[in-house]
Image (cartoon, rainbow, N blue to C red; front, top):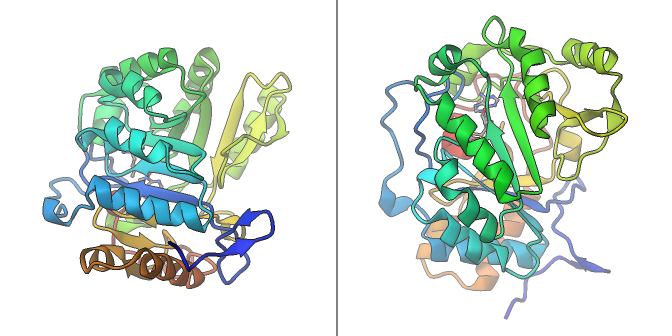
Length: 335
Ligand code: SAM
C-alpha cells in the first residue's frame, strides 16, 4: 500500500522543483563494457563496481515499480554494455509488464546483439539505440580498441528482422576522426531505415573532456539544404532536435548539450548499476537507493526518497562553466 504519490488530475505525475515532468528512467544494468571508446571509458580501466553492489533483478523491479507508481512511463536499459549482464531478456520481461510502464527501450553497442535481438524483442523491448561512430573497420578499431565492426553490423541486420519499432544509430561526432563520414552514415541509415542521431561529446570523465566536441549546427544546416530536410518530431526523440525528409524516409537528430543545452526540457533521471540515483548527467548530486533497499525500507520510504531526489534535480548541467565537475565517465553513470 502506497501513501506517497504525486497524484494529479488524470494520472500520476512526478515533477521536479523547476516544473519539469520526470517520466523517463535510464537504468544501467552494468558498468562493464567490451569496447573502450576513446571519449568514454579509459583504456586499461579496472575500477568496475563489485558484483555484490549491483542491484539484483528483484531490486531493480522494485525500484522501477516505485518509479512507475510515481508516474514514470519510460525505461531505457543501458550501461556499460547492457548485453554483458546475464539474462537481460529475463529482466526486460519483468519490467515490461509493470503497470504504468509503456515504453521499454535499450541502448547497446550491438557487439552481442545478433544473439539476443529476438529474445529482447519478445521480452517487450520496442526500440533500440545502437552506438556506431564509423562504418570503416580500421577506424572502428581505432575508436573502440576492438575489431568488432562486423559483429555490430550483423547485430543491426538481425535486429532489423526481429521487428523493433525503431532503430536509432548514435554517432558521436569527433573532429578529424569521423567528421568526414557523415554523408556515408546518412546513406547507410537511409538504406536501412535507421534514424541517425549525431551527438556532441560531453566533458564527462577525463575521456570526455580530452575529446572536445564538434558543434553540430553547421552540419545540420548543410544536411538540411543537401537533402531538402524540414524540422520534424520523432516519437521518443528525447533531447535530439530532428530534421526529416518530406516523405519521412530519412530522419536525423542532433544532440547538442555543448553548443545549445536543452536542460529546460529534461525529463529524465538515471539509476547506475550500484543503485545510485543521479538526477543530472552533468552534476554530482545523488541518492543512495541501494542503501535504502538493503536497510529494508518500506515502499513508502522508497517512494519518498525518489520524490525527494527528483525535487533536488538541478536546473542545468555546467559543462560549459565547470567542465571538470563530473569525474565519472558516461559508462559508469549509465549513458
Ligand atoms: N553500451 C551502450 C551503447 O554503446 O550505446 C550504452 C552505454 S553508452 C555509455 C551510451 C551512449 O553514450 C553511447 O551512444 C556513447 O556513444 C555515448 N557517450 C559515451 N561517452 C560520451 C561522451 N563523453 N559524450 C557524449 N556521448 C558519450
